[in-house]
Length: 92
Image (cartoon, rainbow, N blue to C red; front, side, top):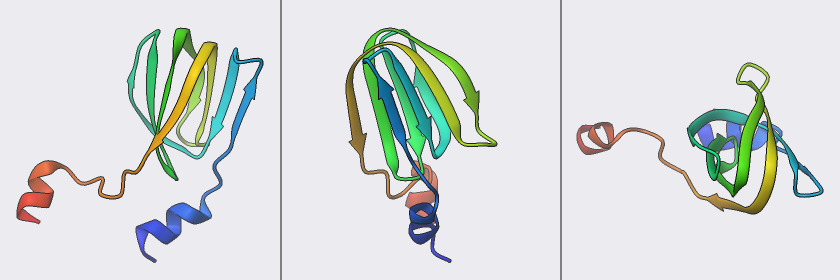
């Protein structure tokens, strides 16, 4: 089964409570995080969360779940269709 179709079958949800608690499902990886920005790879693309005082409370890649606390200012998706590295794409 192609990866794109498999990703569409994996459930992905966001629950934001009072801009202070964010629950994310469908999490495949966390690329980068600090107290102002968290970059998450989900089953439906890359999600960037920005804000202040951000803290990852619970991360379970086996279950695909992430809990974030802090003040959330923005949630932004970007397409991430080709997840292979640069050299793999170049010589692949």
